[in-house]
Image 1 (cartoon, rainbow, N blue to C red):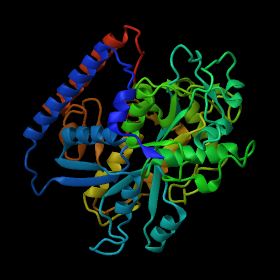
Image 2: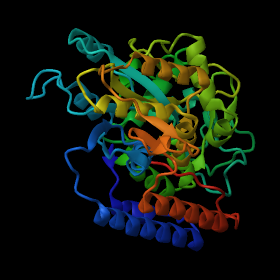
Image 3: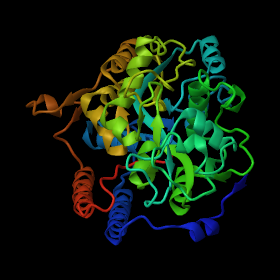
Image 4: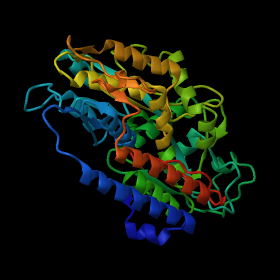
Length: 466
């Protein structure tokens, strides 16, 4: 399979945005860039009393993390400096483990990590062997899906229905045209041009989305069509069928699908919905065929996590081995069948980290709070169900801080005198730049609502590439 060049994409491009939306995107980007420059110019030199916390890992929730870290820096007393490097789940695990760190074996590069996958059994056992008690804290759920560019004149009202068996045939090169009986039989009234080829896109290089999609194809075909997708074809990088085309990154996938009529590919749901891609109606284990936006609205993503707990697929102990956790193809009438879990990686032993440990505790506490979980929606992610969130609170109970550690508290309504004490994160204490950022976001959302009120594309969510 060949990588699609930018020039070829441009030839295929079929614009999907209105002029108003393009103006909104441009002005939003310009305003955010201007504010970022102001923030950089206003950054003050850090002194020796600043409490520093550094993390690294998955790119998917990176903007979500940056939002919280900026909020902490603005509202904390004494001063804190918190960073997060968006380098991918694998690097996040590598830097958390520090197995080959020149400073010493299993000396972590970071204070915490994050990833869209748990540690595999080998890495988990390595950490155990080094007496590192890793806490894996599920904090976010994300749906993945297939998207297509079937022209509007042919697109069924509820999307083109696809089962796992049919998609396995499409992505393995056995079904190559849109009028194949396997597709037409699922879609009453669907009449594509005779012999219209299916342009199949897949990700190149390592991709957690590819890992999720291929895991789903394997799990979902095991009962009805076990020979269509083999376990050997599961991974973040696999050997794709000849005739399929490779693209780089979530942005590249979205651009490729948008630019190419009669194409199909896969991407995280928030990104695809935001970009106005055609949603494939995916059939779940119960036989319900639905668009991912409908499943999200019906709570189908959280249902997958609840089923995982009910079936003991997800451990109830954050110190346990999570390597077998998979939320793919869970049962349930409205359950979405392709769901990824994002984790925080925390060392339970914070007794030697000084003031870092309590700050890390406060950060995890905020991520799990109602406010932290609600903030996920701003970045097209979904909070975890109550029972899964309880697992995170058990992780907080398992964190061991230094004997003289001072825990942080949160001031949400005015506490006279107390809110001005040290180790308080106060909603009443804000920086001008954090305030302006909130005002700017509110203004952008207001303008987006005005533009989208024309009915051209509907509401669009914010999303990050993985």
